[in-house]
Amino acid sequence: MRPGAAAIRAAIIDLDGTMLDTVPDFELALNGMRADFKLAPIGQDVIKPMVGKGSEKLIRDVLALDYEAARIDACFEEAMAAYQRHYLAINGQRSVLYGGVIEGLQAMRDMGLRLACVTNKPIAFATPLLAQKGLSPFFELVYGGDSFPKKKPDPMPLLQVCSDFDLAPPSVVAIGDSSNDAEAARAARCYVLTVPYGYNHGRPVQSIDSDGIVNSLLDAAELIRAHNSTEN
Image (cartoon, rainbow, N blue to C red):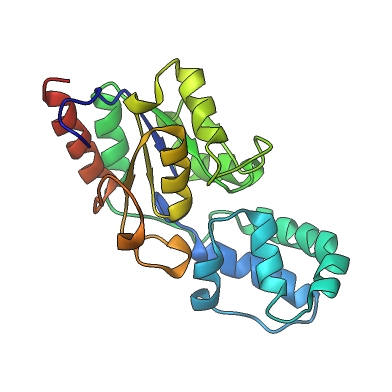
């Protein structure tokens, strides 16, 4: 973040790979769906690079491990319904909070930041998961991948948050683990910070065009505090 720039007034925070390691939940739900189709189970190492682009892309990528395009199209609706059924049944059972998440969110709130969670996860999965993990009270807004016609990396969800908060995009920072978060933030003219422990579609976080890599949300809060303490 640049010296002399506007103070940060709000943060838009990603969910999967940023606040929670949800790959174990994906493993259960996807393999439940695959079992319904009499397909062999797949491991977390296969699933992890596929996470983050929305459920539709995830299901198509998982089916593409075994099926050709025409067959994927033919069974997609059934596969999606099966996946959603399995995911709702296990949502949050094996997902784990990353270190520094609660402390970071609390620090951001304590310094007066407004917080929104914007994820490509369907809102029907995201809302109960945040509640289950004790994260809901931190967020004024929660938007999922199906909340708008477009999802990250499109800037639409981030721009809606800026509008909802009545803030100019340069006074808002997005925090996430993937290029989707960074591309959406750049297009919206928000700042963007990335965490190194998430998924990023299997690519190194250093390849992302961001304003900084932070080891935790608590580190992000400290960086924002330092930025805001300068003469902005």
